[in-house]
Length: 135
View 1 (cartoon, rainbow, N blue to C red):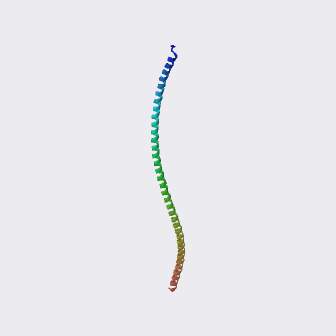
View 2: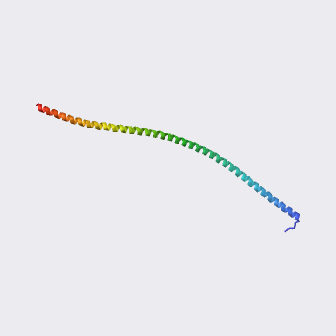
């Protein structure tokens, strides 16, 4: 449109390019600053997450340790109770044998009692008969 010498044309183009270049550099510097702020915020978030994770991990480890201790206590109680049950079963079996023996003795005594009652009745009958004969 306008006539300009090559040298001036080149200088005008260079000036325009230099202005655009400076605008681009400024825009990129702003983006870099925004990105650096975002990186810093992400680093802070990461640090907070790591601290929360470590705290939660510690809490869960304590809870797990507590659960394992409780399990060991329960296992010990189960073992003690199993031993006690075995002891009680042994006693029960012993008492069952004793009861059986006592039932046999009772049966024998009942038979002897019946025999003695029968003998008493016989003796009583004989006595009544003798008394009757003596009268």
